[in-house]
Length: 263
Length: 156
Image (cartoon, rainbow over all chains, first blue to last red; front, side, top):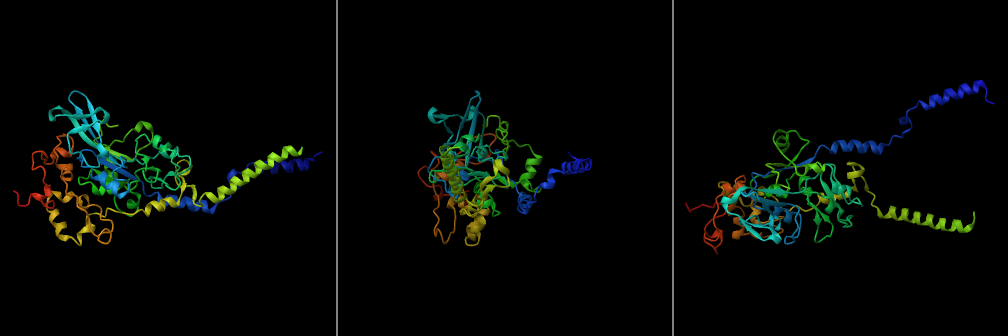
């Protein structure tokens, strides 16, 4: 039998105990707090890319520089970046090509349609024509990272998606997962390969190799967290578009002069 | 319970302990959830450093300036000033120590990257003066007549 005194005592204790918030039992981890503070500091940078398609002349110097800078075998038909040519005829047909990823530029009016042959379009037949440089969008929600089963590809605190060559098992999920087709297997390392905004350059205060190689200023890189960055100003104040926004990947390569034909 | 029930249980426990032991040895110490959370940040932290250590090859125009001021200044007075030295001369890497000599691309194809006329209305390409490579002195290098650092020098 429980006495009245004990009943009241235990009830009071029980209520007092139950009213304690769960947070009171949480052990404060100094390491975790420090990591959070560090995260706040390092996230002062978020790299983004800006492409002006009006300025691009299709010289392909960016592709050449990228391949040499990032040690992508020069003659292998893979590239971290490439330039696409779009030609719309007055009859409403669309032709697009990127011979050798535009490594050697566009030095002919003939359009290389691979298995469909070569198409020569006269000057009079052209309605719209332009070049679109492509590279990794360093998505805010990168699908390629989500599908990696081993944690070999990840997003750095500054937004750049990197691949750990020592950890990649070469399953190729990320290559299929990328809606932009920017990933491929490195012919030498046999691991997933992608544009990383020349991580070794941007973290030293340099520009990417493609940005430096472009004579026309069609490519620019910037920090969107810096309100005074010229790239941030353009993205904020002008009309820019992104590729395949319907996928919800939040791509961070912005384009000036994008057209609906650009895929 | 009987012995034959426990024996496989011990085997299973042994396998689990073995896997955990291998995991401790095999998974690098710095492997973990990065600042981008479980979904996007799961990685080996030192890989960021590995990528930062990657060798820079393209050094930029200013790298050439001090030793080749004549070339640097002559091209800067022409429309070609927007072109980086390394676009034609190749990446400097650690020149002059490595490589001691750069290989210059003097091919017609290099010039045609910009100077093959493509009349694309909304591209800067249509504003660049072009030549028909089949009619404009085929078979000789462009630099035979045109100094790339001052293309119309002595020709006007």
